[in-house]
Length: 71
Image 1 (spheres, rainbow, N blue to C red):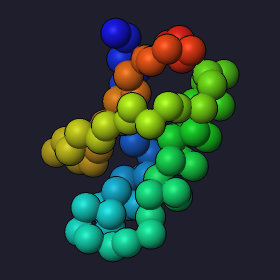
Image 2: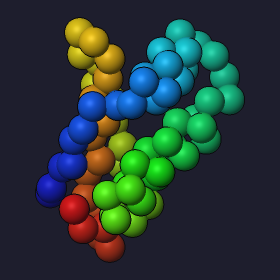
Image 3: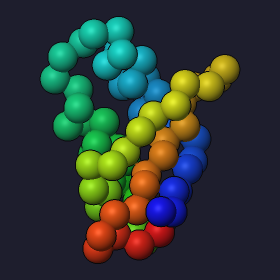
Image 4: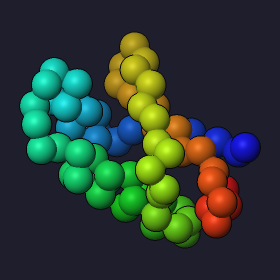
């Protein structure tokens, strides 16, 4: 299984910070940011196999490949 990883943008980091602090209703905005970055990289929209890893200065985005999704 392949994994594509990249540092989250400042906008996505801010959304994730709010999300993990318990603010509801942000998941759609978070996934829109992920899908926008994938489109910029000319990749298909993400399946819902996305993870976010906290780092010292923000978050990393990890998208795992699934059937029909090639990275």
